[in-house]
Image 1: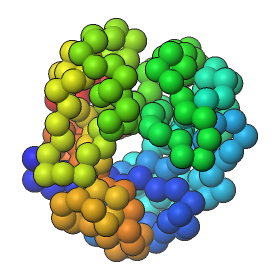
Image 2: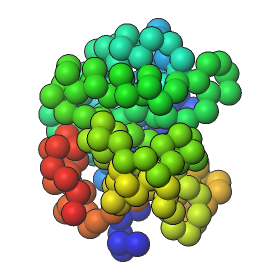
Image 3: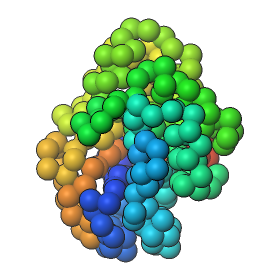
Image 4: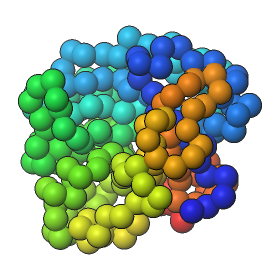
Length: 217
């Protein structure tokens, strides 16, 4: 664990409109906001939170919650709604969908390829047990082009099943704001998902402002 690297949060409509000035004063450096889910489901606070976070000098990124809908159309809608700049991150959230159909591995592959065609870069891939189970020990050249954001609410992330595609993780979601190691709530935000970067803050900023194009250390 790199000291001082727990400086990233990810948010959605459930956090409403955070006070990003307080969050920045509390040490937060980067924010990843939910933009879309499936088809035609747009997070209602995304645009306002993006503008407010960037006004406070925070790094910004966007994620899409994948579903069983057409993955190419999902990718196209996500890129349009997220409207990310070259210094912002893009992420596919690949996990269970309790409210409906779930994105499968072939569809996720189509999604990341279409995002790369539209933006010139591969998105990050956020997942926990799903990607470990679905990829297993397979070395996948398509997913290996994505940087890995692993979810595991424990003292450290373990992902031996996927090391053939990713020699190491880039981001680790260590808490949902209630479960996981400290620190948990964020001043100005309250309970939210918290993340750490596999490197120091300078490396984080270099990686982030490249839009994820520069490999992490």
